[in-house]
Image (tube, rainbow, N blue to C red; front, side, top):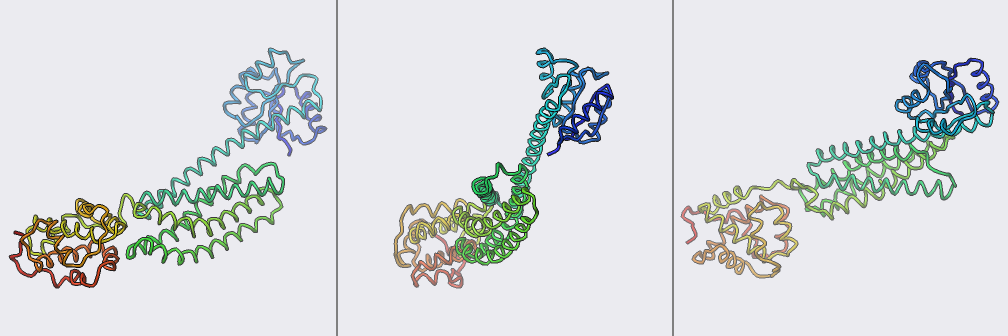
Length: 445
């Protein structure tokens, strides 16, 4: 790799001698020969320079002060000091403190120029790579945050976007690990090109969010009508077909970059092709559905998968159907829920409670860990006892329970469908709205 060198020398004859030495050394291109400190700033402002040689006698700005200013303004330029004579220890210490990478004593030799230029160019390259890596890291962080924001707006949730982006990052880390293993462990390369992991990170996270819209968006749509796990079983295979076709086509397109005879392009082709395949066949097809099932209803936090009726709306609808005052309708509702909680499984009880507004959800918890099987007459008796309506007849309680359960079907339709499947046939009339009380004088004693 050739180094781009600028010579800040006051003597043009001496500059010509150094240029001749540079040509003899090879791998050094002299791109400018400023003769004053002002000329140095002008050259660096418009010319790409990796190494700058400064004469100890350069002016008008003292060369050590000039080096400090250059180090602050152009940190990616390797500075070399050309001493007028043999460099003294004091000059070496002062040069290092001012930002010089090396000091070349006079008379200069080809070997001294080549070695000092190599050290300066190595410094410049390291600083440039570190600066570009920092810039790319900031871009990657911004890309992740933007993807989080867009997913949160699209899904109207905070938990799901977090684990979706985390799954994309996990797939990215696995991809980078495989790429490093292949190029260093199999091909014997020293290291990956520094910008390849960062460029791949931005692209793979962005592509992962695109696939998230396909998979998670389809699950979100199906979850409006189905239980979450059933929604996943319906939506994930359907979305996976489109994701698989798109992923294979995209991976093949990136793989074609391997034809470019540059190592960085081949690294990029490998990391993108493998990353897209991992994202397609593992992350989106397996990991995302599994995480959605694992987090369950919490995926929609702080919102809800289904729009929840308020407790006031539920009680008022029960009061209207049962022809009861609001206070008595609230007692009937809580009593019916408590009895229902004793009849259904604990899992169904937790799911139903999640979709009920507070404080109605707490009525289901009164049953504790009970999971009993009893007929509808026992259910009505328990509901009457929990509501405190010991003077209410079985037929009246049947009408009140019907008003409550038909209202719950509107508040949580998919959950009540699964709950009805657990109940015996004698419970079916309780879900018939036409059997709700029709008289206006119904009341609890």
